[in-house]
Length: 422
Image 1 (cartoon, rainbow, N blue to C red):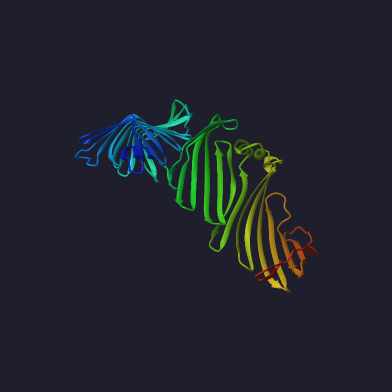
Image 2: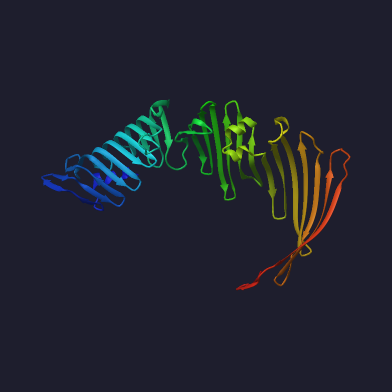
C-alpha cells in the first residue's frame, strides 16, 4: 500500500537512499530542504524536514512539511504534513491515497494501540475523479490483517446519502465475518440496483454470503451464496436469488461426505417463470427449454455400494401446471472378479411422483467384462443380460434382454525398466 512508503520518510532507516537540495546542521537540529527518499518500493518527496533531539524523543523528532508525495507500484500517497518520533508516535495530516480501484482521504492518520486510526474519512472503490459511490465516516480504526471499525459510516450514491449506522465493521484480511463492500450498478437487465453483502465464515472450509438489496422498479431483492471445501474432491458452490413478489431461483453443484456416505446435488431450479426471466443472467440462460435438479446420497466401497437420488425435471415449453416432473431412484451395485474378468451386478428401482406414471420400475442387469491381450492387440468381449419389471399393478409384462459385444484396439508396446507395458 502507498501508505507504507510514508514511514521511511519519518524514520529514515539506513537502507533508504536520501538526498536534499540543502542540509543545515545546527546544535541539536538538522534541517533538510527539498528532501527526497528512494525506497525499494517507491520514492517520497517533501518541501522541508527537520529533525530535533528532545527529552521526549532522544533519537530525534521529525517535523515534515509538504506537500509530501509518495509514488509506489500500486498508487500514490499525499499529505500536507507529518510529525513523529518513532514507529509508534507519529501523525500525518490531510492524507490522500489513490490507486486504480481505491481512494481514501483522512484529516489525520496515526497509530493507536497496534492499529491505525483515521479521522474524518472518505473512501471509495474507484480511483476515478467522480466515483459513483463513496463512504464517509467520523473515524476508522484499522487493524492490519483483521478488519476496520468505523464510527457513523454513511454510504453515498453520488451526492445522496442512502444508508448509515452508528458503527460498522469491514473485514480486510483472511476469512473474517462481517460486511463486504456494497455493490451498486446500472445495467440493461437490472436497471439501477444495489446490495449490501454480509460474509459469514464459521470455519476455513465453509462460508455463507447474504446480500439483501434493492432493484429499480422491482423492490427488495435477496441473494445467498453457500460455499464449502470439505476435501479435494468434496466441495460445492450454490447460489440462490430472490425478487420480491416474483419468486426464487437457485443453481450450483457440489458434494460432501456424511459419515460413510456422500451427499451430492447439482442443477438449476426456479419457483416460477417470472422469477426465471427476471433473474437468470443472459439471453442463453433465459431461453432454456429444460431445467434439471439432482440430489443424491450414496455409499460405495471397492466391491459395491448403493444410493438414493431425487430428480426434478422442468419442461419450460409446457404450461406451468404441467411443466414439472419428479423422480426417485434407488440403486445397488456389486463388482467382483470372475473368469479372468470382472462381473458387475446392478439393480435400479425408479418411480415418477405425481402426474401420469407407469408405477415403479425395476431394472436388473448382469455384465461380464474380460479384456484379453494378444501382443499389441487388445480384445474386450462383453456379455450381459438384463430385465425390466413394471412393479405397479398395471398389467404390463416384464421385459428381458441379452447382449454380446466386443471391442478390438491396437496399442503400442514399450519396454520400461520394470518390463513390457501396454
